[in-house]
Length: 402
Image 1 (cartoon, one colour):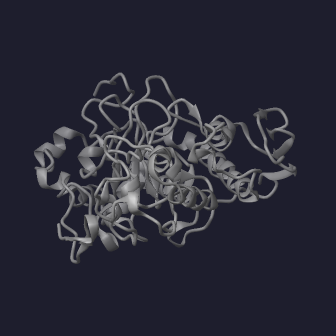
Image 2 (cartoon, rainbow, N blue to C red):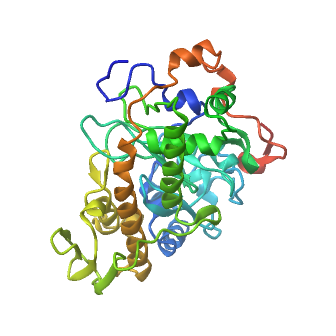
Image 3 (cartoon, rainbow, N blue to C red):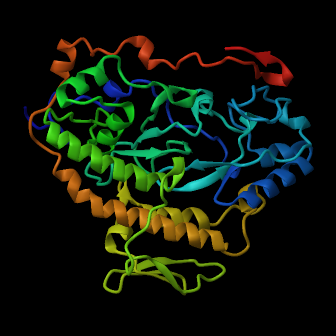
């Protein structure tokens, strides 16, 4: 096999050949419905519903897909109103924890009337058993992971480049019906001498995926020993990214390498910098250490994760907008979240060299998958399953059954 421009090998399947059902990223349409803290969202909602007429319209931020007059069905699993927002006077729906781009856990108002493209099919299958594989947009010459995984509902946004895709691991709630191309798990089980599950396949993909202009490529090793090493590595990478979800342990660095606050973060830190020699992260006059270079330099799509995380919490907001309703001073929970994020990035940076050990060797390529009748992917496998066994509320309180 010959190398391609992306560093993959000709014949390696794409992630879409393995996990065929996917959606485009969510398109929120307005920034004020997402925030790093919950109180800001409820305060923004209260200000909006207290406004009337043209002021409510302006604060809402109309788009082609949503205005205060839009008639929209409720999001699956939610308890929000479906009357036109122009008449809304109630309390803010309970904000939902989501993954905003890579590694940034934030809060979202889960109201379909406020979201341009919410991808309801994802909300229907988002539960305690679900995992989401999130492809990162391809950026030439940019380092960083091609594939991330989340237990939280991800918005799928990439920090740079064109957006990738969101691929649930299961097509139905409760971890039912793996989103895997028919016949693939049986073939892998036969080649590697044990039953390969959907979660084992995802673990391999997390460890082995490489960026490609055509999409996220996943070379499938034909060597059982390499497969075992790759799936073990992928499980560890997944565990770190899930941060204790699904009953797992929260990520921790060994004693002596855990980051601590050495000087309190000021009420309004305006700058972020890193001293690689002393392994100190400076937030204004605040200091956190040790912060290894691997965590500081960790980038996705060519964008440093820590810098992007900080910018989203400190960038100025336009006066008179709902985005300007935010904490007056740096909340303590942000510092705690930052310490955990540093830990996640440091652990993943330490694991990265092991990914290189999976490269090369014999592969199960697209040609073999075609010969086995696994490719091309059946059209039905690329569509969401029909999962409704109950009514969902449509616009203006009507019921819809899809």
